[in-house]
Amino acid sequence: MPTLVMKFGGTSVATLDRIRRAAKRVGVEVAKGYDVIVIVSAMAGKTNELVGWVGETSPFYDAREYDAVVSSGENVTAGLMALILQEMDVPARSWQGWQVPLKTNSAHSQARIEEIPTENINTKFAEGMKVAVVAGFQGISPEGRITTLGRGGSDTTAVAFAAAFDAERCDIYTDVDGVYTTDPRVSPKARKLEKIAFEEMLELASLGAKVLQTRSVELAMRYGVKLRVLSSFEENDETAGTLVCAEEDIMESNVVSGIAFSRDESKMTLISVKDKPGIAAAIFGPLSDAGVNVDMIIQNIAEEGLTDMTFSCPTDQVKRAEKALNGAKEAGVLEFEELVADTEVAKVSAVGIGMRSQSGVAAKMFKTLSDEGINIKVIATSEIKISVLIDRKYMELAVQALHDAFELEKA
Ligand code: ADP
Ligand code: ASP
Ligand code: MG
Image 1 (spheres, rainbow, N blue to C red):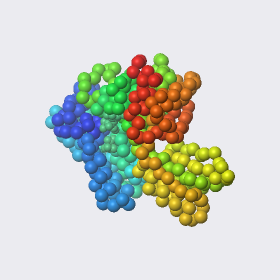
Image 2 (image 1 turned 60 degrees about the vertical axis):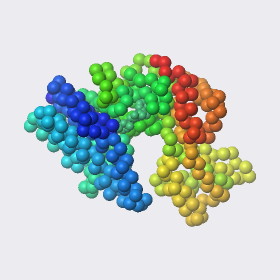
Image 3 (image 1 turned 180 degrees about the horizontal axis):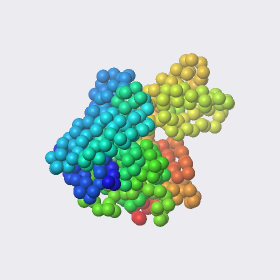
Image 4 (image 1 turned 30 degrees about the horizontal axis):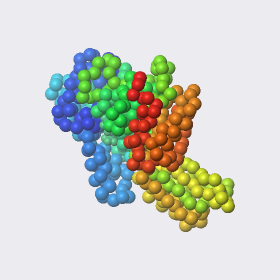
């Protein structure tokens, strides 16, 4: 039998009624002759609640217990989905990550998938089971502890299953009907894309578009998984949603395909560091050891042998960064006058594979922001993206102005 993977996100399984609606979609695919692997998220809001409870116990919680708690939301939906399918006379069984077993490394709360053996589930398919309902987001470490794959990780579970079971397609059912030129909740002019290249989706996701977890796009690209994003609330036909595919499969690519943004960025500046060889290593070594994900970096021109060094990182890592840098100062391995954190910034990025062959995109982006009176604090570019750090209060304005400037509402 051909295999299909269908993933339902939190809002798509938020209530029993919605799980019933999702189960009906699964039933339709079973009737077409597919063996279906359904990946479910926790009910909407559940994971946030669980994360909040863990945080209330202590700011220095044990990551293994964090995973034990926050993985539990998915267990509930997996069981309920299997029960509802059984009520519909569809032979279904639920699987928690460890039962599959979905094997990961030991990086608790951010674990990476290492292997998905297919025997257990395939044996059940051979015995007549039509649907395996798998709890997304979770796995088991080599030590036998429950792990989770990072927020939004059910997308990655889904793609990994599609690769392991050589599924015909991986359908990601969510609360929007596809991937848009920007978050449709921020810009009403956002346009749904029929197709998007893996590379572009990878950049959009890593720059803040949470419609797919970054790692899921990486996996789909590596294993050539046919990945589709579509609505769990609307009627869908064969061409519904957005197909994430190889660049060659897109006839005409735009210079800019999408605008992504990330609200929870912070900018940190070390004032008056010595401008000498080894200074960058002395700053970013301790930050890396502390697990701070440094994103953009700028070093000012030195005056009298002293310079300022600025970098950005996620806001929830600012305290950790301060601790690491002040620690290095106290240990005498780093000298600076002051450390200033600006936690009111956001990152806005333009992404498009067409940028490779077209110049002037950066200039247009900067001009557009300047016309709106928005000051750019930091800039970073790569082959197919340009990112800027700006005051957070201008984020929505910047997204909309750039969407207009690059005429993204037009196909
Ligand atoms: P799920 O719970 O189904 O995993 P998510 O909330 O994780 O859903 O992802 C879907 C959300 O992603 C949408 O509701 C939308 O607000 C947001 N989003 C951000 N950027 C985009 C984009 N470019 N296209 C579509 N949705 C986007
Ligand atoms: N429930 C998890 C989260 O909210 C995983 C997911 O939904 O993808 O992050
Ligand atoms: Mg998600």
